[in-house]
Image (cartoon, rainbow, N blue to C red):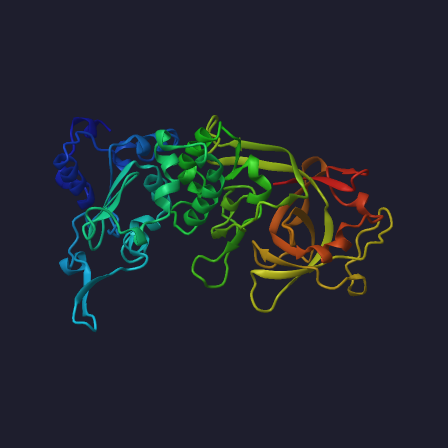
Length: 452
């Protein structure tokens, strides 16, 4: 620390840092933020404090210098390239009447290819970089083939210095104005932020993290910005309270396209109901406006690792939900270990009797499951959350008992089944009151359960 305060030998820094200093000086900016130099390394308290301020650093910076095309800090910003790739591709044709016409060949996906593809934008495959890119007011991308510019007013490249052609404009450009610039937000933009968050999570979960414990921290800056734009709305381990039932319906998929490997992290990262509990690509269902809630959130608990930093690392979190809990049996399909079918027992269960899962008591298959983990227990529970007008969507849960005989549930996966097949599940049965729960509401035949 003392040595750094006295001065830093620029030649001792990685090539990318050296190039960033050159760029800063060339645009007459006197101060440069580099995470690994400005945050005390191996100091957990300083790191936690600075991590909570990242959204202010990147949203308040004059410009973000991005080594978009570099695979490591040793490559620098100014990469060797073929200049031919910077020039537009023109096709000259003659019409039957002999008139010469020139067409420009546009590359669909031009922006994404140069900014975030594995080959040309490796920087943006890193989890920490997503919030830096989405919060920065201006970004100068030093890519593998050309330099590109991004701000609230313009997306440009060396190939298109006056801005991308309309057909190549990215949808990201419009909706993110509210995140990058408070002045740019409008009343119409605020309702869209919920959907924007689901897209951000899907993109974020495709990226990689060096440390698994950074799962929630590396996106906390975006979460804080969202809180500020939505009247400080409650945030629960990666989910927003106002749309909690929809956001609980995430589905987990393999990042590589190969067999799913969604074993839990070695340390506690997030509760099972949160997408942050798995190292997987997360997808949310697209729901229409005519959605009916079948369950409701009664209360929730979230204890952050650092007091006052609700969007960061979590010590513990749980939800208390009221809904129609029903016992089911689960059978994995033969095609893939990430999907399964489930069946429900016949309705007539005498008070105090354990639900019968023998083959003679099982009704035909009732639904489809997208599993979070391989090899779920054969006995589980279904909790429907919403009705879409065609299907019921909900959670597959497992029950366990913790201290003081407290009933708890953890998520096994996402379930979907049609309305007609749900009728047998929805009927009141004599054993409903004997199912494990915090309490059973006789009048509504609903159970109050806790999920962690």
